[in-house]
Image (cartoon, rainbow, N blue to C red; front, side):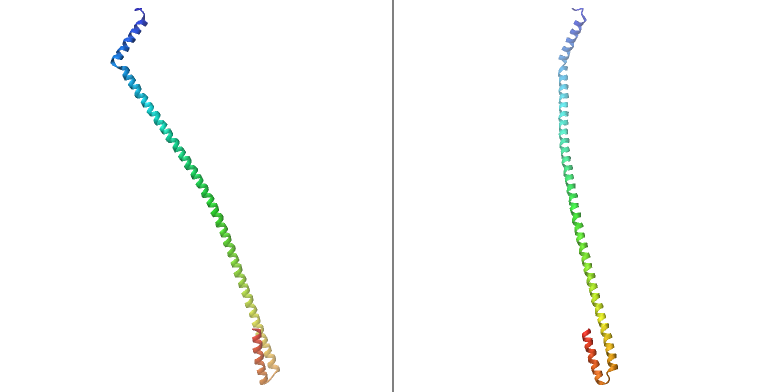
Length: 161
């Protein structure tokens, strides 16, 4: 038994363990392991906290993106409505403008027709008066003719004008 190398290895191991126990190596090892476990636990807690913060930030950004997309859709819809309204207003204004211009042109044409008719009547009256005065002056002579001629010219002017 004392000649066996395993026996001496076991004795050496027991002595080494006794020295370690006397010196307090097991407390140092346990303290180091405790510190390491606390550090790992703190890192895990930190990682969980960071993961939760990242998840909440992700949700917040998703909500913001959805809100921005809704807002963009609302803006586009409002712009379409405004564009349609502006187009219909422009069309109505254009139709009104054309109608007013047409009415103004019709009024100008009617006025020009009336003026032309009045000018033709005045020219006809003047021609008739001139013709009548020429005919009467050649056929009727004397003071009666002058009086008759003046009355006739006055009547013709009144009736034709």
